[in-house]
Image (cartoon, rainbow over all chains, first blue to last red; front, side, top):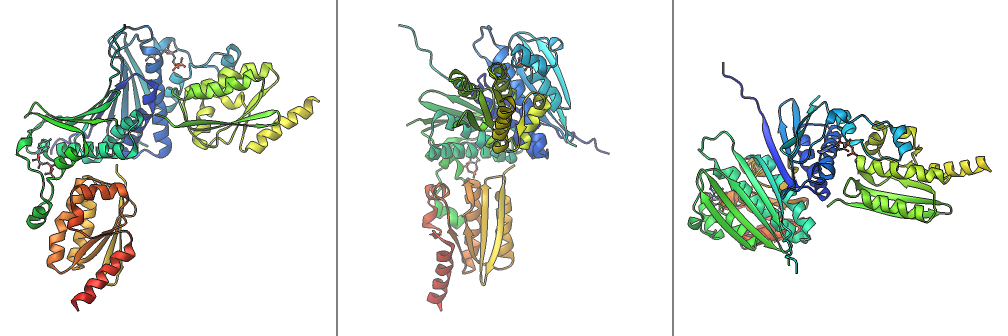
Amino acid sequence: MTKKKIKKKKYQLRLPCDSENLDLIREFVGKIAASMGFEEEEVHKIELAVDEASTNVIKHAYKGVNLNNKSLLIEVFTYPDRLEINVTDRGKGFDPGKIKDPDIKHYLKKMKRGGLGLYLIKSLMDQVTYNIKPGVKNQVKMIKYLS
Amino acid sequence: MTKKKIKKKKYQLRLPCDSENLDLIREFVGKIAASMGFEEEEVHKIELAVDEASTNVIKHAYKGVNLNNKSLLIEVFTYPDRLEINVTDRGKGFDPGKIKDPDIKHYLKKMKRGGLGLYLIKSLMDQVTYNIKPGVKNQVKMIKYLS
Amino acid sequence: MDKFEVHRRDIEEISVLNIQGFLDAHTAPEFEEALQKLLREKRFKIIVNLEGLEYISSAGLGVFMGVIEDIRNHHGDLKICCANPKVFKVFDLLGFPSLYEFFDSEKEAVAAFANQQNATQ
Amino acid sequence: MDKFEVHRRDIEEISVLNIQGFLDAHTAPEFEEALQKLLREKRFKIIVNLEGLEYISSAGLGVFMGVIEDIRNHHGDLKICCANPKVFKVFDLLGFPSLYEFFDSEKEAVAAFANQQNATQ
Ligand SMILES: Nc1ncnc2c1ncn2[C@@H]1O[C@H](COP(=O)(O)OP(=O)(O)O)[C@@H](O)[C@H]1O
Ligand SMILES: Nc1ncnc2c1ncn2[C@@H]1O[C@H](COP(=O)(O)OP(=O)(O)O)[C@@H](O)[C@H]1O
């Protein structure tokens, strides 16, 4: 019996930290997901989750951080049964445990916007983990299984 | 007088060496070129040149080469006046000086296909240079100016 | 790089914003500006028609949240119509239908403003 | 990931291959196979209709080059029609119009086969 090699493929995209690139990021991830056999609805969820994670990097990661190369890294790993996506920055980081799920009625009263991104990511993907090392490597890892 | 910082942006895409990814590569480069203001016709030329360089990596670079990570790297640098694209592999390399421009009538007689890729790249882009270090880093660098 | 467009039409007291394309963190400021302009003109009866909207992220939803209180404080409302299922799903995931009225057609949204008018007269 | 399609229609002695979408190194084998099938069936009067073809790279051109000698040795021909300007430009850059007949419409390509027939009778 030969040991079966696990069919894993790696795709990597590194971009300047600018919202004009969200489009490119969604297309990149969406095409890979579609080629794996994800249905259109699932592809949309994956694109949205990656958009949200990338938007957070663009909006928050490098705020007040003095760094020459403010880039955004998207890594996609495809497996026969699932898609894994890492969105990584080298910015100031954050404590995901401290971010509460949004309460929409509360938001309305406070006229506060936002806080929706992390919640959406959790709702859209099957598994989400954070790995935060401020200034070194802050990573959101998202997994979606093929059904 | 303040020294004006040159507006250079860097985009990087790393992919498995597989022709199924040509589509993704064209979209990636095409979107960046379009966003810089290249006309549709020029965008097409840029996409085709990058497709040809990537196809060469997929077809030739790792033939008979035993390597775990056979990947293809596309780097795009945008400047106010031009687009630079590097297509890089770590395969066996080749001598670009030894590759002659194709003679189409000759090809027909010999029933030989191919040899067209490098010629097309030269015709489509404003500047093309090769940097070959077999097994280490083989790079085709292409430049297109905004007119 | 995103394609996004806002078009405004006024129907008497009501202003309709047609938004089209991709509404994300890059294009949200354009939508925000169109809404703020209405508020500066004291036009508080607003319908956002999503018929041509292909995509929305939370940055787009944030724009809706940012103006609604101001609008309602001025006895106005922002009603939403013609969302495609994919776009509606995002609003729905975040509980928007409990705060905003959604309609299948623009006509129904216009009628809802008229009915409110009658009820308060 | 590419979208590419080949459809075949026979008009008496002539076979028309409609190719659509993106013809690159990934999809070229599918086009090659469709041509080889015609050769196996000894059908050597071939029109390739490019009406729906959005993109071609040298891998696609290589397929045309690979079969033409065999076809002409059998007193047949491969004629090309309905290329859009972007696609024609690629053929043109590589000197194909000196080796292959290009037509604006399929009708003209069919007529060219008929004329050749008459000339040799
Ligand atoms: N990559 C990141 N770097 C730094 N802070 C982040 C990052 N991602 C999220 N955050 C923090 O988490 C908070 C919640 O994010 P999110 O739910 O997307 O809402 P919003 O971005 O609208 O505030 C942000 O306000 C920010 O403080
Ligand atoms: N990245 C590469 N690695 C190794 N060899 C290459 C590479 N690019 C080009 N070559 C060599 O150059 C030759 C000419 O390439 P090209 O003009 O694209 O025609 P074709 O690929 O159809 O042979 C190839 O046959 C190959 O030997």
